[in-house]
Image (cartoon, rainbow, N blue to C red; front, side):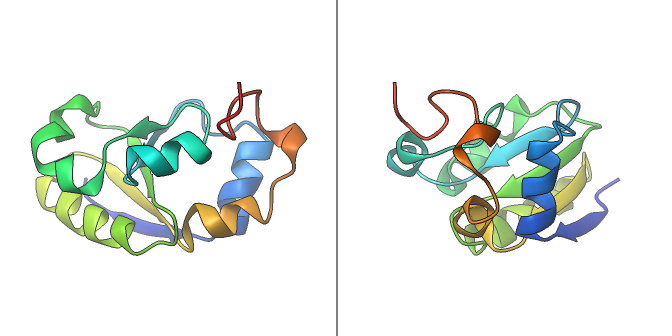
Length: 116
C-alpha cells in the first residue's frame, strides 16, 4: 500500500455530492475549533499535531482521503502516513476552503457546517 494520489477539491466535492465516499476513510487534520465551523460528514478529526499518537484509530487497508483547511497540513500528514504503508492515500489538493466553493448547502446534511 502507501500509494499516494492527489485529487482536486472539485473532484472531492463531486464525490461528496454523489455520495461516493461511504467506503473510504476521511481524515481531517485541522484543529477542533476549525472542525466546529465546518466539516465533511463522516470524516474523522485527528489534528496534525496528534496524528503520531492517534493514527491507530484509523482502520488500515482502506482508501484514506486526507485534508485540512488549505492543503498544507494535509501534505505533511500524507507524507507521514505513507511511511506506515497502511492505506491507499489520497491527498485533497486545496483543502476544505476550496472544496466548499464546489458545494451547496443541499450537498451536506444538517449540522455539517457547525450549526445545530
